[in-house]
Image 1 (cartoon, rainbow, N blue to C red):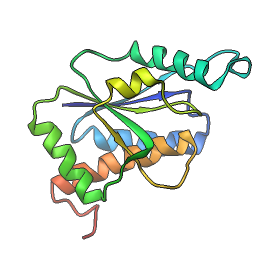
Image 2 (cartoon, helix red, strand yellow):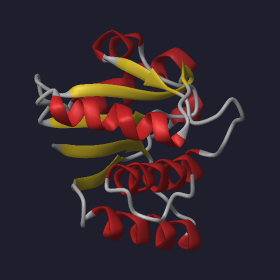
Image 3 (tube, one colour):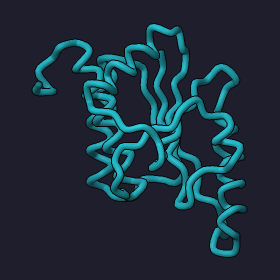
Length: 157
């Protein structure tokens, strides 16, 4: 199973980029993983929130395939402990999913079309984080999930 983190915008903070790359490299020992970004919408200051979400949604959908299992990283989504998330990842692997696509939306969230395409919504926290930090937290949690599944000592129970 391939896991993809699809995001709006780039990570411009050098320290965050390096940490994300560290966990991406570690994840390579367990699963096929990629982080894909679409460009921020041009002239977004002149757009309504709804129009910006619509344009971002269309741009994100270009990266999706019909058989993808789409999970939105959304503040209103289901929360997991790290162990429960690992168990959820394991269930996805066993179900025969080829591509598990996690999406981080833009500053105003997701278009209604993306909500309709999504299989599930997951929340990393009830707190709000910058989109760049969400990338790091998610990649670390995905790595942690795989180490839990392999009973490796990264996660202390």
